[in-house]
Length: 527
Image (cartoon, rainbow, N blue to C red; front, side, top):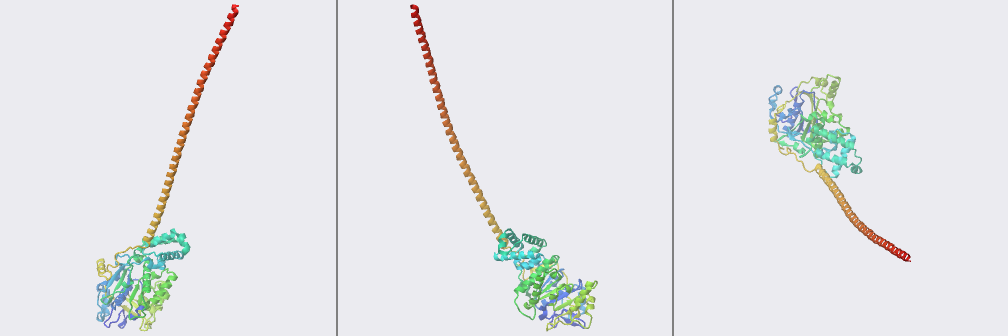
């Protein structure tokens, strides 16, 4: 809240001492820590409202849905009202009010869809999102290089799957150009993409892709509080943390250097921050550390919310200048060690024992240390966090929809667009190749048919010639047979005539001999 002096009021320490983040030190980042149920969500909402009140846009994740209440006036919670009354906040300018809100949701159910493209996500974050090993990550980098070289747009997961299929199918071609392509790695990436789809992760890949400058809007002089619904996606920690890492990277890449401003351009709240750093590869951790360290010069403040300061790597924890520590429990040796670590991160106040105070804080109380005008941390103070002026609780579905319809980006992201990209280009290319293969197959079949027809024609002609030859041979044989018969007939006739002639000659000879004998015999008898 903004008190009646016009300064940010986040907490009240003993003796009615006002504590608040200095706007020009808000880009030095911060930490909100504490066990479950100690008031971290109300503190986050208080900070978000405070920044909004001075015209600073906010982006925050809503794990339980309670942060959505910032879109309507509070006043319905008796416990918070008791704090308002006991600390005399109304006299300081406290009043229940609504703040300008824009709801976002990765799947578009509880807010405007949050999308990005596969190309914009990049191979490094995508490899983490898919839990790939080093070899598989190298293959994924290779695939992204192929996309760049061939001008293929990787917008959604089907584009990436199609390009992986292309590279895997023609790996000998790509191996010569880019190095070894393991089919096992291609298969592993494809399975990881399938698993990502099963978790609903495919819904935030597509277009229109988010324009980060839409997070940096103001309305009626107040910064818009961008609330991302995370009640479902929190069950997929890699999706949740990888997408927020992507947003941080985009802010870092796209925003110009501005140095230290009177107030930030944007404040980014990362709830359940332990999910961000869990099992994070060293190379990626170095990248995050670099972003956190340098993004403040671009006018962005990052505030991590987590249960235990130990959840934040030391190289990043040291950059979080503004700190609010709610109660920690010390039931186990590990818990006790965490309490000691948390206490040591503060500039000690001789008025009390910080380590003991951390375990004694009640709900709504916290140990607070903000940066002074010179950027140095103030001594830690035990204070009561100012309740939020918006409603501390979830809004109804109808109330959420009403806010969305009044949003400055209403209609910009709500309808997905699927333009020509790698999937369509490669599918068309494959279809062309398949058509060429089909045409070649048809040509070969046609050639075979023609060859068979030609063969059949030649065989038919050969058969006809053979038939003609056989006919002529038969005719010759028949003619020869007829001639043979004729000769035989002629020979038989001549033989018969000759025989008859011989027989006749014989008869005539006999007759002649007979006549001659009788003549001789007669002559002899006459004598």
